[in-house]
Length: 249
Length: 311
Image (cartoon, rainbow over all chains, first blue to last red):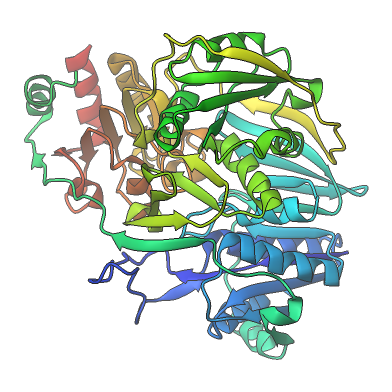
């Protein structure tokens, strides 16, 4: 069985982003970029399924500028077998990515497609669900546990009130939540090995899908700042402030 | 122009988040219908007809809709989607799960976590964990929107008198099935609807200390319980306590952060709270930068003292 994993190159989660002074977007010049943390969990899960003998091959895909090759190399170092970059300098929105992934999943005949539940840059939380919809596949989103057996995948999901478990007939789409696994540290020998693995570069046009953006960003602004608060000396002072100044208790 | 709101419910009661989504819908269009798709959810339908501003409640009733699985629910929404210019759901686990499925089938974009409606096709939404606010315009004929509930005051749950329309249930050819559910049992207010929240972080050191310190303080305040990702990952509390970029987004009247350092991902989930109190032993903790009232103190003496002072 083949597993397809989608990864996105995003601003590293530790970076405090800045809005450009002309309000056209976020300033990402000279900012550290990394693999979206949820996607790292997705790669790790796929590699574990391969190590457990469930999957035969793990293919990682990214779509975006040429620098996404670094992100794909990281995924290969975690243990994916080969990589595909759909190279484009256009803004690719979730619906466009879902169409690209559909074309690739069909070509590769992937049985399981794993994605992060959301990218930490645009915070959309859409691509996995859209892909499942376009392919008429069942979906297990926000997964904290994945068990594959007998042509089915059982997914435990993090939902508002706690946990929920569903069973999906394969092929299926899974999106990862934080507690699905802890991705391994990438070792130097594995980084070296990853350099020799196949990384194929294709253009979106070769897949014949419509990738035109549907949302136009008119401006990007800083959120309103909170005014500075005060430090209180002790518990009594805190209680006094909450009762008489903030009047919230 | 008319809007459809997908009701958030558990077949027994209509969840408040629906009222926030209806408020957003009314800013998109004066004509707002609500879809209640469930099983034996008559009480939910009755409640929805009472909500102020609702024109019509569409009721789809079938066992396959009982568990809000994405596949049958999306099919149900798609069966009537063509009648609407806007389709909205609260940005809850259910809303986030189902609406992108609907958008993809309609070949339109989705606008996630909308916090402001500027016009019928221009919206504001936070990006980068709320560190930036994007104003976006949709060029699609149908706008599919998940609503960040903290961005909209809920409409009144009474005063309406909407008509009920039965909807035929689409055939279920679903390849997914419901296995089970482990819900956290609690008599406390729901995290996303609470007026006061007490949240604990890794500074507590253990799940026992969370129970010993945070729970009594929440009791004294009548508050809901929350936590940082670090506390959830360390196993102090269940996953549904998590407040943050990828957990629950909250904006209570009072948010008390106990032993939470304040990673940007946590701040993203609570910085719109009206009053923020931070108690931490580390004076350099980033949480103090968003706190209205900060107290540098040892949690193990300060929290019991605070609980006692409020009791």
